Amino acid sequence: MENNSTGNFLMEKNKKNFLKSFLLNTIFVMATAVAVKAEDQNRPFEIYAQIKPNNRIDEIVLQSLRKYHIKPANLSSDAVFLRRVYVDVIGTLPTEKEVRKFLADKSPYKRKKIINQLFKRKEFADYWALKWGDLLRIKSEFPINLWPNGVQAYYTWIHSVLEKNMPYNKFAYELLTSSGSNFRQPQVNFYKAVQEKTPKGLAEAVALTFMGIRLNKLPKEQQEAMMTFFSRVAYKKTEEWKEEIIYLNPAPTNILKATLPDGKKVTIQPNQDPRIIFAEWLVNPGNPCLTRNIVNRIWFWLMGRGIINPPDDITSKNKPVNPKLLSFLEKELIKSNYNLRHIYKIILNSRTYQQSSIPQSENPRTESLFAYYPVRRLDAEVLSDAVSSITGIRENYISMVPEPFTFIPNRSSAISLADGSISSSFLEMFGKPSRDTGYESERNNKITTAQRLHFLNSTHIQNKIKKSQKLRQIIRNSQRRKGNENKIIQELYLNILSRYPTEEEIKTVDKYFMSEKESKKNAIMDVVWALFNTKEFLCKH
Image (tube, rainbow, N blue to C red; front, side, top):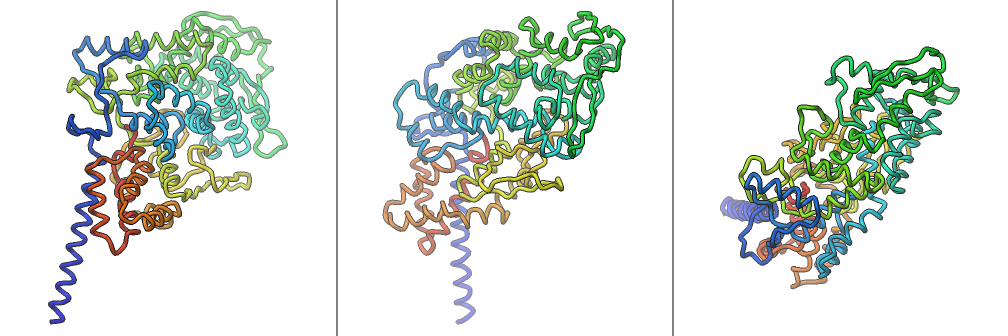
């Protein structure tokens, strides 16, 4: 009798585990899916609408697609657009309140309005200072060795530039021509944040950052010609720990004969700074090198693929897939007085950016010609902040630099970390760049098996869910709302996936809640865990 009772108990337990696994898997599949029936009135990802261009970008892109008989994707739904634009512009998920407000807004101009609002948010400068920190190699430790004082000075200046929307030509000019203490003249850290403080090392950094060119791919004579402009940059220590002065070496008295990258010959007198001559050439509106590189990078950052791709390997053989589009963006940047926000906004307001991530064509050129928005995993820092924001539990960061100057407030977000040397095991696992080279490929946003297992099984994610005061508040609310489970389910979906659940999803989750009457708390946490593990949460789409 005892054995039979034990057997019945085990059978019942296995039955519950099977039901739990089945229902959670159903949630997972539904939230991960990218295609549903056209007649589904709760379709969460797309809007069926006539294909009409929003601006000149769309006219150019659609013309290219017609040439190859490629049908563009449908327009993304309002919920998908909102989450996407938040993640792309400020590296942050919208709150439940922000999602509800946007989806309830019936104005035909609400997308344009929210785009403009996001540029006024503090997180805009935080997120893009992070991106520029990757490109400019802002980190304290080896092999860059800026030291925390230099990092803070450099990062604070970059953040201020982004907040004030400094014209890009001025930004580049200041970085290229500044001299002084790297603690007190932040811009000079550009010449310190390199692995090799040699004319070659500096020329490589300049070519990569401002021209999208890899110096080692140029003919030897062109490499040497560019190195000439940085041959008089010198460094000296001061009495202050780790401070360094970057200055123009006055010792050489010979006249320099140099050749600019476009082949123009120049003579540099002993009292002239070769960097200024190069910088004036680079920021000249008639020179496409600066404008082509930055508009192509912005397109890459927002669209997941450069018009010239990869964006930091521009060569005569690596042609733009849409030269007319690249030329248009270059001209727009110059017309706007090098206003980078103008470029962001015309891209973000385009139908090309706002289209769905569900391709409508099997043509192999579909992705490269921007016929749909490409799905990519969230940046490591954005994903870390998303989990922290939803659970209300911040990440713990570490720094390998043995010094007392780095202070990280408890409420710091990952996107606001100034120093590439500050990290966490989560950020490392999810592809945070090392900031050693400035290459875009340093950041790895591909989903790996280890990352999937981390979300599925790690105590790190489980503890954040279990210890979350925000989720406990939802649980307390659920106990007061007995018989009205839809509101709880809505709350979970709006917070995690930034959209309302479909009717089918509500039925599935409600059925799971009914099966777990003994522990509503565990049931809610199970659903949170299931939604965290969906591709819809892990990716921008």
